[in-house]
Length: 179
Ligand SMILES: Cc1cc2nc3c(=O)[nH]c(=O)nc-3n(C[C@H](O)[C@H](O)[C@H](O)COP(=O)(O)O)c2cc1C
Image 1 (cartoon, helix red, strand yellow):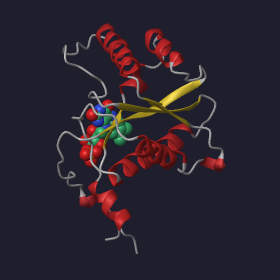
Image 2 (tube, helix red, strand yellow; image 1 turned 135 degrees about the vertical axis):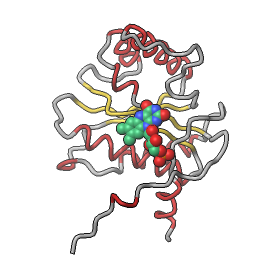
Image 3 (cartoon, helix red, strand yellow; image 1 turned 60 degrees about the horizontal axis):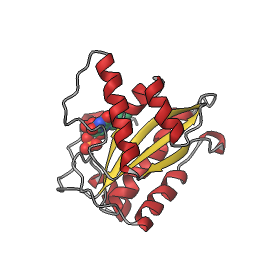
Image 4 (tube, protein in one colour; image 1 turned 90 degrees about the vertical axis):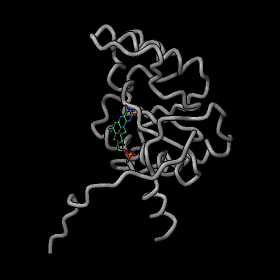
């Protein structure tokens, strides 16, 4: 296998992170990988916001937790939506862009693969997407500079892993070669 295929095979979701910030050049490399993703008609409308200030990430956690509680889903006191990872990458795109989900998801997968290639842990985080239109969450998104007309496609938690683990087995029966 070449290095790219090895990276793809090694990628897995990490849910326990060291608090240490990743190096600036590592973050830059991951962000470049994100914007290198394909986009429908090369419109490049999705954007990535790298949040490294823990106060903002904690604010988001508090707002998300409140929304889930209002929806009747109590979270434990220890709940932290991005597992205390030092970096949260938010991928969003304009509401009017009908290919936002596809474009943003390509960016997210590039983020996961770039992080894996640098031995940095990563995980897709979905809670912000599910709660983004509630006022208290939107208020924090505005503070982060995310435009009002943007919808969050998904987020990536990024950081050094507390412990490494093998990637999960995947269901081989999902592959079909039609001759
Ligand atoms: C659309 C999507 C949403 C996800 N949301 C979350 C999430 O909110 N929190 C989380 O811990 N993992 C989330 N995941 C990660 C999946 O749980 C994970 O990819 C799956 O269990 C397979 O494990 P692997 O990534 O290690 O192969 C999400 C993955 C996808 C593709």
